[in-house]
Length: 392
Image 1: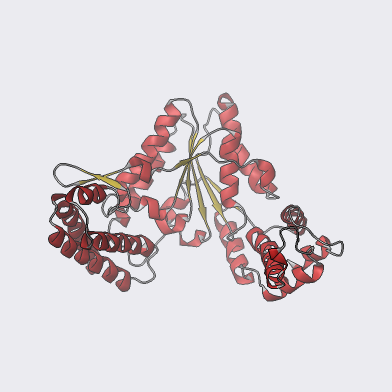
Image 2 (image 1 turned 135 degrees about the vertical axis):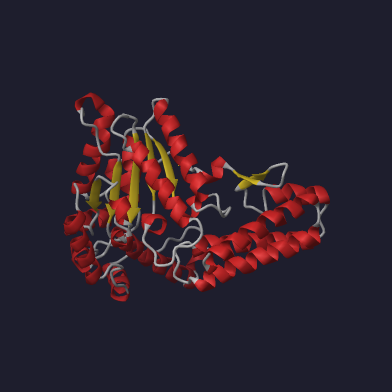
């Protein structure tokens, strides 16, 4: 067994024993075991500093440390037992009679009702069309698809360009159950439960589909969950295999359930090839063109007070290469600078006073200090991957 597997196994054992002692009111023993679990988790992080799930391990270590502080304080035995179930584990699990841990489905499966429509997704016409063909049309008229339809859709491209908005918009249009997850929520806060979480996630989606509701599972930062890693630790391999199994079940040609998996990633080249082929649609969500940037600037400045000298066409030119989130940040930063100036002038104490309108100079000063968040080299990598694996 590798050092990483040994450390994770040790952390799991220490954590479960700590919870058991915590429940029994044995504070000193529980504190010692929580400390050992923390040490094992932090050693794991130090061994693999580039590992994508380190955030999960650090969060667990922090949670255990908080519980230690609570136990070291003056609390009653009944309070300790109640907190052992909820506070120490972040509400992620409940305690069984034998001291074992049972994950809470509400913690694992987050169902959201997106309030996003197509009008809020500016531009991206090619991606919109591909998603409508894969999801919206089959939901509206499944009888027109005798060969079935794609159930795995991969959205990839630079960060901040609308991948999440696209997934939320299609869920809104077809009134789907929307299960939004990331690696941290699937790779359980309880070590060793991750593959069970995957099964429960897909089980909930299938149940909704069997009851007549379309289900969309949206996996953000897909590469951190299904990427290729030189040092795979813990139950990651088991999680991958479980996800492959569940996706094969979703794409089974003999079933017509409306369950879809939409994955989003900024690093498609990091994905395991076994997953790539299970996403029948692979859609590039690119940087916005000049027309779309202009529309975004109009939208983001519509709620701001701007002077007549603000030339949105010129700002569109100056923002070449900026993502949608970059453009929003520029508008937000200009407004923040204006508000800072307003407060520093002392005028804010007058409740009737208002800041001056934003000028072209305000925007240009922000743009002079900012660079696009996506480099030209990165854009070339997206184009090369798209040419190798595109499937619109």
